[in-house]
Image (tube, rainbow, N blue to C red):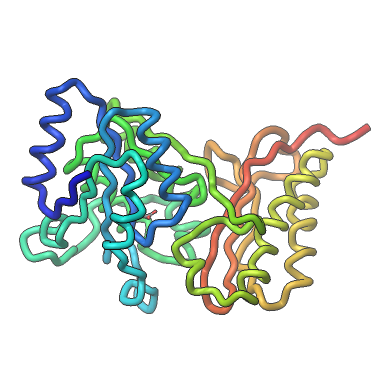
Length: 289
Ligand code: PAF
């Protein structure tokens, strides 16, 4: 496994791999790797012979007052964690390599559109423009055949698929299932900010999603399913709910009560000031007889 910081070094390694006929996979990350990321790396290798993991905390996707400055930067530990996994290159670019010439991001060059201003985009204005800009840049630099993203960031995944479809012909986007702690809490680099009590409190997020899924399975209309999840939040005052919704997976727009079929239950909540998101694919069935 090689650690590189420049585009020139990366170019050489990717060109060599392609010359050997290898498919190249990219796993974009911001570091602070946990088991969920490592699973993305394993999935990447199942789909390609050469795996690049990028580690870059992208200033452009953090808003004012967000945690850019205190976002965990743990490159040494990340490289160590990747040692046991099928990663060929860790690409941890200097900021000037991503945003030349001076390492100043300037304005986003990608636009997330209307869906980019709902849910996560409403809570974090500009976040998706910044995220898409860096992802587009990483696709340009790595030139992957496959890129693997976590299902946990469902709205991000939705946007990235759109970007790839519009601008990166032939690039396959693979969604990796969310990895959870035994409590059900979805793994996230931000979980490390939580105290043990907050971690316990945060389990209401996945419990609420399960309640939504259970109600959907019994054929309840979407608004009733959401109600089932809201009830659980009501019993957990330490966790401040931002949204709990059911969206059509193809459109990322809320479904109405007539909707039947596969959908996505999505949630965002704050626990002790830490913003957590999660989601679950659900099936809203016909009403029980
Ligand atoms: O999901 C993330 O960690 C980031 O949004 C990504 C895709 C690496 C872009 O910075």
